[in-house]
Image 1 (spheres, rainbow, N blue to C red):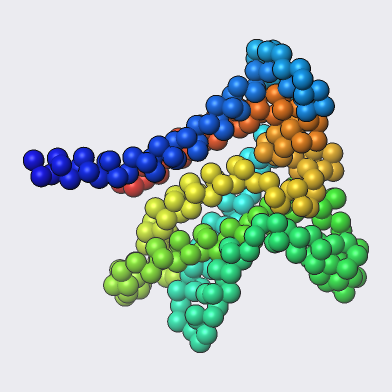
Image 2 (cartoon, helix red, strand yellow):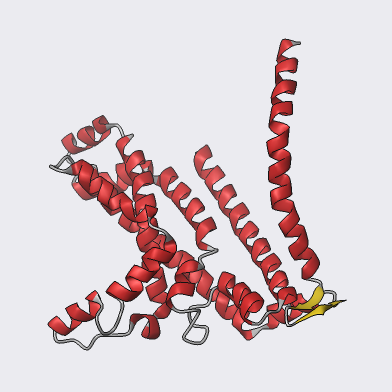
Length: 290
C-alpha cells in the first residue's frame, strides 16, 4: 500500500513538468502541421487558403530536394567516419600514460564547447580563406596554388568543420569505454604472442562496439539538422551544392517567404529523422543485448 502511495505521489510531482514538456513539443509541431496545408506566404499574409497536400507535392518534387537529401546523408556519413575513426585513434593515444596527459585531454575536448557559429567563422576566415587563410599559406609555402575550399569543395569543407566539432565527443565516449577494458585481457593476449594489431582487432575493438554504437546514434540525430555551419560559411552554395534538408526548409521559409511550403518540408524532415532514429535505436538495442 505504501509503495502504491509513493508511486502516486511521484507521478503527481512529475506531472507538471511532463505536461509542460508535452505542450512545448506538441504545440509547435501542431502549428507546423496546420500551416503545411495552407497557401501561406509572408508577402501576402492575408491569404490563407487550404491547398491540401499541394505543399508536400511541390516540396518533394523540387529538384533541390533530392540534392538536399543526398547532401544530408553525405554530411552524416562523412562526419561519422572521421569522428569514429579519429575518436578511436585519439582514445588509444590518450589512454597511454605520458607527461601533460591532463592538459592534452582538455585541449582535445575543448572544440566541443565552441559554439557552431563561432567555429564555422574561425574555419572560414582563419583556415579556409583562399587569400590569407592558414591552408592557403601552407599551400603557397609548398609551391601549390591555394584552393578556395568553400567554393570548390563546399560540402567537404562543411564535413571537416562539423567533424572538428564532434570529434571531442566521440573521443570522450570511446576513451571512457577504453579505460573500462580489463588490462589483464591485453596482458594475457600479449603473453600468448598476440601483436598490437591483433590485440586491437580481437580485444579492443569488440570492447568498443557498444560505445561506437552510442556515438553513431547520438551524432546521427544531431547531424541530420546541421544548419549554422552551412549558413555562416556557404549559404547552401555554390548553387545548392552544400544545401542539406534543414537549410532547404530555412530557404523556403525565410528566403522565399513560403511558410506553407517550409512547414511541409519541416514535417517531411521530422518524419525522415524519426525513421532514422527508430532504426538506430533498434540497432543499438540489439547491440546492447549481445
